[in-house]
Figure: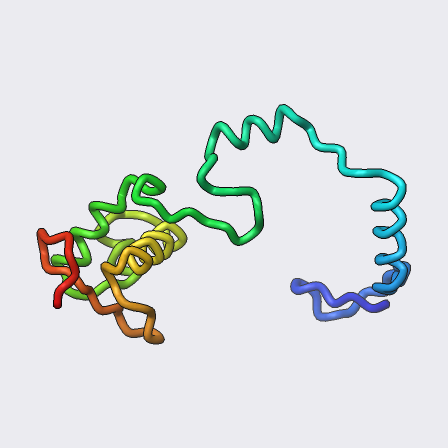
Length: 135
């Protein structure tokens, strides 16, 4: 096979084995039949005590106010500004993009801000100093 690295203009010849999806499935099925799961009880119990409300499945999240200590501050910032965006939260709260985006997701789930509309800032549904949505 030929491999083109990002820092090189010339392809490099490499050798590798091809394994089809069918072969991978056969190996996985064999392992499932011959040996069951081998869970480490100390790891499972430590995960349950750390964050029992989260769950263990992929994609499961519990967006509670307690998940982020900046939630209330972010709520005040967007209420004062009248619009909400990740870059606004980044600047005002001095956080990175990932945390600002997570805060926006929490605010959206709580009904504080509206859904994303492309690159436009999100609408804010509460007035400054209020907890209930604007009617």
